[in-house]
Length: 470
Image (cartoon, rainbow, N blue to C red; front, top):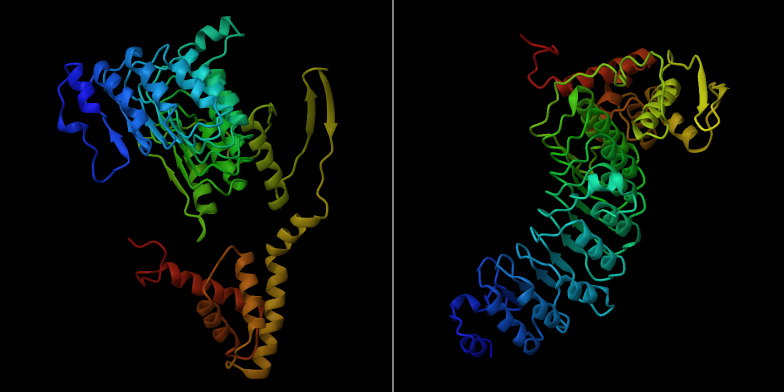
């Protein structure tokens, strides 16, 4: 039927119109440059192809002349799940598509609109449709014009930008899992709102934001949202002018976020402080169950900003705006260090209220930990675990000498190792136990010395007997 319609229109029938054996339920016309007449002929026969699941018409020089009838036919295809309209000029005909996306009967799961001439106004209409759509879980809007109206939004605050509409959609959409917004112009307030929206989104797993202009504050908002977001597994912020303070906030979010496994920060000026925080997060959060990746290719990591927070030298006077994620991150680090480091304490804490312009002096002092924090502190109390390990080892030494097979002593030694942030194998623990109880007399110094010896042997792979070898 399609061939007849093409011949009636005087169109050349080419082998490229044949379905491929690898995708028998797909009509792949991508990058064929067919033009409006051929696609209008296709639109007329789509109703006779109820089993088609993929319709790919990217880069075919299409305009509203063919897209309008095509969208009407698409709405009548009961099995269609994937639609690629990239690199075509979509204008007024988009209203037909948007009406279909709003329907409960919409079956499309994958929608690709790369370089489809989508500006802020068209993006707003699309996001309104997606706010009620319950089928689409993959959306690619890369290489479009989203963000062109951002400067206009400054003088016209009532104007809704594409980025703002995307943020609003993310707070209510429960289906979308993959969103690609790369190579647009999302920045300023729109970028900030997208960052804040991630706090309320619980479905999105992949978010690609590369080659936009999130810069410092919006990127901080994204990092702040990651502390609460429990669904995102991949985030791409490459080439977004992410500043060192934002990189530090992103790194700090890994203390609370357990789902993100890939963070791409390529091509940003992370600075020395930002890169150090990120590497620290990578080292701290990398576990057997979680393979975390943070990429920093083509980044400026040599830049030094002495005004930024330094965990190695935290002494100083801090004036923190608690509405900013970076300031909240700094305060949390200061509180952590005052709890964990014996020489760290707050000398004065003053709370200033901007609205009332009032000042209040706060008294902060150390006290006994309770609940989960107490349990965590007990786990890290190496002196307590050392005393228990010595007592258990002494009992084993007196009873059986070097011949032992006792879970109690292994458990006691494992807790001691863990309190020192070490995670040796059972074999290593048993080797340490054998050496310690060999003499029959167990002392705290002997236990710690043997732990150090076995730790040193682990890192001394070249058996040089020294840490640094010339």
